[in-house]
Length: 522
Image 1 (cartoon, helix red, strand yellow):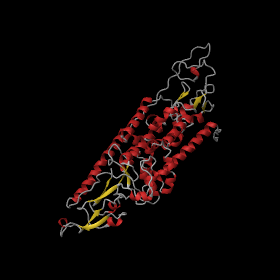
Image 2 (cartoon, helix red, strand yellow):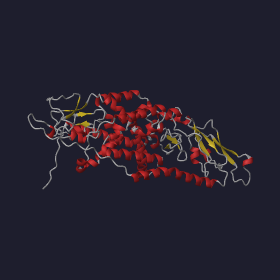
Image 3 (tube, one colour):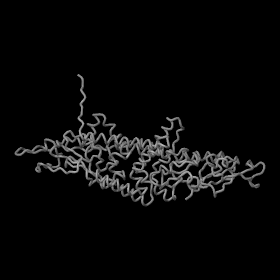
Image 4 (cartoon, one colour):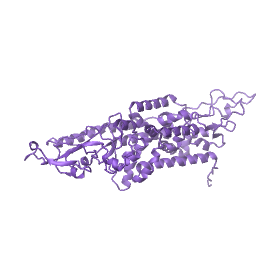
């Protein structure tokens, strides 16, 4: 026999859900394209996506935009979480994939869970205290937009570059590992428990939950129409619908409209009203579930046996082997770096060469001060993704362990182009102020420094310097002379005109260590 497809009528609830899904997927596509496009002009046109995100707006001090989001939340609930946040859309995808199968939906339906207010507000207070106190590591890791941006710039962008015929460059192995672990953890939580991250860990979701409690529009259950089928509860990825009380917790609801679309009786609505019982005598019996035939007491009838209480969800077990393997990979990274450094030292042991390290790290152009840059930057990786020479890389200790994954210049990878202002134009938090080309030409981010023992006098640094601040001079006699193996000439930097673009360091061919480095400005 042929099976006929079951056609679902288009109801207002399903229409609202479809519209929300379209907006959410469009925002996810725009945010992904913002970080992964190879066209700088398209990235600049998509900059509005970053300027809609709440945490970057808070770091930029954009109080008008924040007030607009507060008003939107007071009116409509947490529409930011359901439609604008790219990490929220990513969680929806992870939670939807296993539930495409009917067997999974039947075995693992969503069930109501009590709000863990202690944990989520503790996380919110921790992030707020760390942000004010300058401990940026925790806000950087927990901001959903920044975490999504790091995943795109570290994991997806190299694949796009390879597909486009360009050299795929990974900005930082540590940043890649952190981004993959973050997305894996968020995806695993969404796979089994829907939007649990939004309602327990995410600082933006916790902050929006406060005004969302009193939102004008909210979901209300009409108990006269409700048949207690629990379809809305099993569809609620926020696990905030309590059928025992017929109440929707607005502070956790992400306004996804899944419950409205799932209800075949039209008993749950997105409205400004509060439904009252038409039959006030209909009350909950004992502590059993409400809505089953066994719980409804008829006048004069013998008491029915109570229903069996539902069993809580089984805890998710952590694979110990995978956990240990991940820990070994993280622990081995410093060891591999130390082996490479030891090999370089062994190569330079037979010469008079010295390894140069910057006295201070070099921050991107456009910062007001180093302190202001560290306070405002969320480490989203947008500037890193669109640096044409890949000179910008997420920090892994250069700025201190209190400020991980924030961009710093690595001139061994590339130089800061003299006429490029992409990073300053794209920064959504105000950590980098937009610069014109003329302002960029004179904006000082560091000063070059030459190690005489390493210099081979090739003159490439002098030729490539856009400010013409490097010249070749004759090496002093005591350090030169026949048989010394050193060049007759040495590079000299005029620091009064140097802006620290790093072109000299990038092109220096001296081995095993370069003869010139750039020190950042504090």
